[in-house]
Image (cartoon, rainbow, N blue to C red):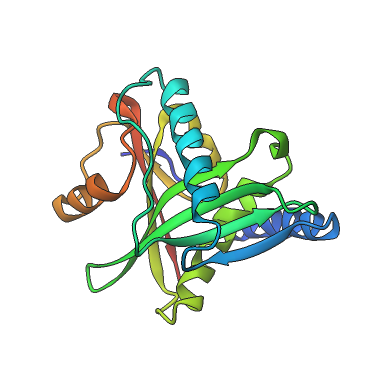
Length: 193
């Protein structure tokens, strides 16, 4: 049973576009993450973000660190001064005869929060598939602590209750790719047509 059914994708898309335009107007730049460039900065931001999310969930020692895998891609957001303001990390996996895009990490540097960067990164996630030459029709899957479930709900994700059953293959793949947020972890997913 869903904790949150997800907002209307059209409403979420309108908010994404509004925030994206404001960030671009302010001089922020969005970069597709491929290869080795900028990976250390992104890995550091993801480690901080995951640690903070675990702390918010009351489970700060559930799993240590965050490591980027060679096949990971994502999007980085840089401030007008070139600082890493935020990033997403994704891994594409063939699942149920279509592509599942696992959102492995999403983080916004503290100095850049409350500007819509996380919302824009979520909205841009399907573009990673397009840039990689994969079919854009996909299911985006992630896991988050329950205290952060409303963020994903507002981004049009269906958020399952903590402890909800998920298909075995999804749980296995997700268990390998996604951070563990302890007993309050929620699975969140969204189909991209």
